[in-house]
Image 1 (cartoon, rainbow, N blue to C red):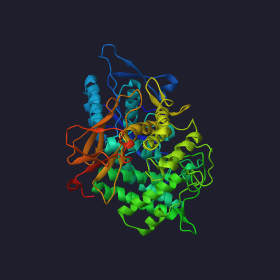
Image 2: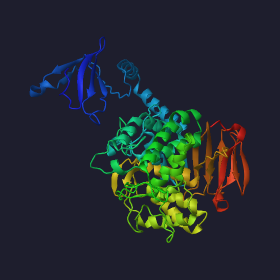
Image 3: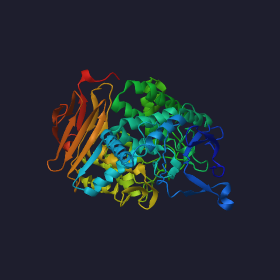
Length: 574
C-alpha cells in the first residue's frame, strides 16, 4: 500500500521491517513551540495483511486503496495499539504480545490495573448520599486518568479528555489537583514536581528574557518547559504567582513525606533558583518594605495591579523555604518585610493596592492565604474576608472557588458558630452547579466553559481531605515530631459517614472514618509510633492495624485540633 498525502506536521519516511508485514513510518515534527525548540521524533507502525487485494479508486488512487475481502477467508480483525514507548523494537514486541492476547484477557488486565491503582491511590467513601458518592468517584477518576505513575509529567486543567487550554500546564496542577495526589498518591505528586525540575531550563530562559535572575516559571508550560502563552494574552507576562505556587507545592511534599534524597536532589534546587528570581523581582521602599508590582493575581479580572496579597504571601513562603534549604539573610529579610495589604478601618485584606469592596473578582484569591497558604492573620479579619469576597465573587466564576470558601469557613466555624450555616452552603455550591449528569463531568463554570475540568474536581476533593478531615501539613524544626494536624468535623446533613483511605505520610498510611451517628472519628494506621495529641483531650496512641476512636468536632473545644505526632526516636533524619 501507499501512505496518504504528505503531512504538514510530520515529515514521514517509510521503513520496512523484514520478516513481518509491518511498515514503520518514522519522521520528525515540523512545527515546534518556538523556533529554537527541539523537534520530536514520531513513529507510526502499521500492519499490512497479505489476504487483501488492493483495488484502485479512480482519481483517488494516488493516495487511497479500496480492499476486497476474500469471502472464503476467516474474518479479518484489525488491531490498534497506542503506546508511549519510543523504541521500534520494543513497540513491535509489545504489539506481538498484544495481538496474541484474547479480548477478554485484555479487558480483565485493564480492570485489574485500575483496581491496583485504586488500592494505591486510595478512595473517599461517602455513605448516606449516593449521588455525592458518585460525584466523588467521578472526580477521583478524572484526576487519575490525567497522569501516569511511569511518566514525569503534569496535567492540564482539562486533563487528557479534552484539548482545552491546549493541553498546557498551569498553576491548576500544583494548587488544585496536586494536593489530592500529595495526600493520596504521593508518587503522582512527585512526578508533577519532577516535570517542573526537568524543565527548569525554560524557567531560566523566561527569567533571563525578562531580565531577572533564577527561574521565572512560565504561566503556560508544555513539552519543552518554555513559556507558551500566546503573546496577545497578558497572563504569560504578568501572572507571576505561579513561581510561588510551584515552590509551595514542593514544600508541602517535603514536610509531609520527609524524604531527604528528594529534598536534596529536587525540592531544594527548585526552591533556591526560584528564590533568586523573587530577590530580583521585588522592589524595596524607603521604609524597608518589599513590594511586587505590575502583576495579574489569581483573580484574572485584575490586570497590572500591585501588592496582590496572595502573590506576596506565596512569594514570602517560597523565600522562607529556600532559606531552610540554604541559609540566606537576604531571602529572610525580604520575606519578613513583604508588604501585606490590610484595611484597619474595615478589618479586612484588600485583594491588591487600590481594591475597593464590591469590585467583582473572578475566583478565590484572598481566601487562599489562610488555606492553603496557612498565613496566620486574625480570625476577625479572615471572617470579614469571607463575608466581603463572597458577595464580590463572580457567580459564574471557576468551579474550585467555593471549595476554598468551605474549607476556610469550616476552619473558622469553631471560633464563630454563626457562620456554620453559611459553611454548609459553601459545600453544596462547591459541586451542585458545576457537575453535569449522567456521568458527573465537571464543567469550568455553572454556565459551561471547559468540560472535564480536572481543576474543579481537585478543588472539590480537597473539601474532604482538608475540610471534613481538617488535615493540615505541619513542620517545625523545633518540634519535628509533629507531622500534621487533624480536626475532623461531623458531616453535613445527608452524609452519614466520610471515610478516607488513605492519607499517606512518611512511609505509611492513615485511615480516617468520620461518622455522623456518634460524632466520632475512627483512625487507623500501619505506621509505628504514631499518636494524636490534643491540649484538651490528651494523648491517643495509634497502634498499627488497630482502630482508635476519638471525638469529632474537636475544634469546638480546641482550635488546634489533634496533632498527629510520631515518637522522637522514630523520626527520619530530615
